[in-house]
Length: 262
Image (cartoon, rainbow, N blue to C red; front, side, top):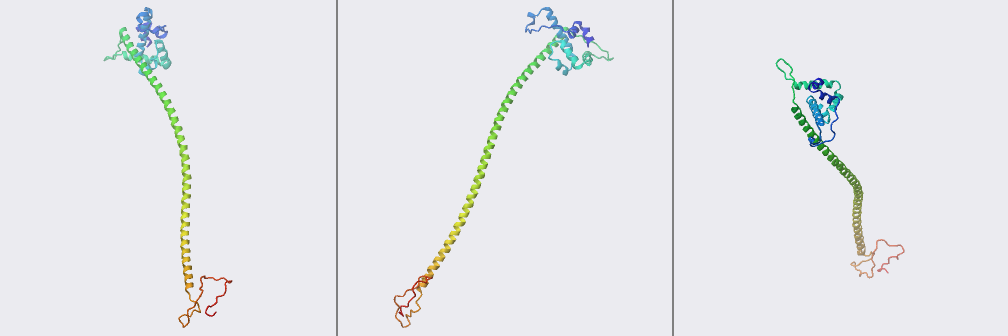
């Protein structure tokens, strides 16, 4: 690789190995402020970069695409590939320049300065497009990170609301359990009251039956004729006859006196 570059232009090799101080100020119209020496340095740097770019694969190009000078590119390639890098770059460059004939002879490919300049401009345009895409991706990433923070905040609020609803639900469940217990006690009380009511009704019926039987007994006792009532046997009807109206007679009551006998 080094021999090939030196064969093209030794100044190019000096630019790559030793580097040259390039203008640091970016000028949209370089023909206005750059002097002839600065223009020549920029051309050599662009030519050297183009030669190196042509020898690199896509992975290697991605690593050095942000470098501005040819020396930075060369140093970075040496850092990544060490001694093997020189052989790899040389092989890639020679592969591009080979035009195999039938006897597999190698022919050098000569590039004009205009061709190199056009290729460099194309690569530079591609580099600017990549930079624009990177800026757009960075903006999108920042926007997405902000949206993520907003979503995290909203999610935290929703989690707090869910916890509050869980606490309320637990409270209401306890209230429902208390109401269920109260309802069960009320139902048990109503059933007990119903049983007592039925028992009271049964007692009332029994008492009513007992009262009716007692009244019938009293009536039967009242209708009984006195032992000494001999009406219909040739005797006159008894007057002032007192009948039993009570089933139980107290001991202190006066003895029964027969009105007939006196």
